[in-house]
Structure formats: structure tokens, C-alpha cells
Amino acid sequence: MRFLFINGPNLDILGRREPEIYGSESLEEINSGIRETAGELGVEAEFFQSNHEGAIIDRINTAQEDGIIINPAGLTHTSVALKDSLEAFNGYVCEVHLSNIFAREEFRKSSVTASAADGVISGFGSRGYVMALEAAVSEVA
Image (cartoon, rainbow, N blue to C red):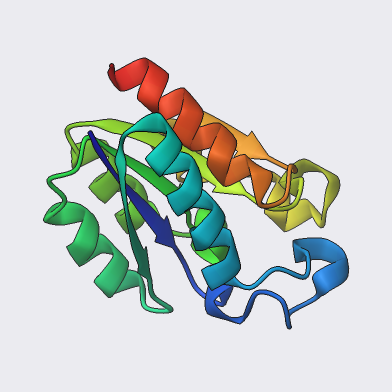
């Protein structure tokens, strides 16, 4: 089984950007932990990050993996195009957020993309990605 982890805008600056909200780990450190868990589970993890909505949509539209675990970041609240792309993906989808979006500013409390996901994990920091992978493996198996 193969799973694609997609991270949206500004997640490339994790560790520097508001660590009190998003934690002190860099995206590469988070990906390293995911790789370790994937190895333990006997699955493959691939990674893609972009600050550009179109690049993310292009990657989803060509995805051949069994599932996508995505943190759409700011696109969560605005992108119908991203939602449409996720809906067209023929596999498992889980949306992940490092912070609890429901305990934040009013505009962050709604997710345009969540309805295209099989599940949503929010507020568990980087552990949320591992939780999503474990759920995905169990759902796809």
C-alpha cells in the first residue's frame, strides 16, 4: 500500500511559524516520523508540499496511491477546486490539521475540503499525521 501526504501553503516553514500553535517540528522532522511509522506498518509514504493551489490539485489529479492524507492549510477554508479534486480521487482521503481549527478564529472553524474526506483529524499536532496513516491502513486493508 502507498499513501501520499500532501501539505499545503506555509507548511514548509513549520518550526519557525507560530510554534505556539503549530509546534516546533519542521516538516522534514514530521515526515521522518511518518516514514518510520510507515515502515513499521509495511506501507510506503510519499510526500508533496506546495504553496501553490494548482500544483496541489495537479498532484492529486495524477495520484496513483491508495490514499491521500492532506493538510490543506489555509486552502481548507477557501478552495472549492481542491475539494473537487479530492472528491475525484478514487481512494481513501483523510484531512489533518496540526491545531484544533474549531478552537481558533471564526473563519478557521469551517472546512470546505472536509466533506471530500473520509475522516478529519484536528488538534493533535504532528501525531495527527501518524493517526491518519494508521486509520488509512486499517480502512484500505
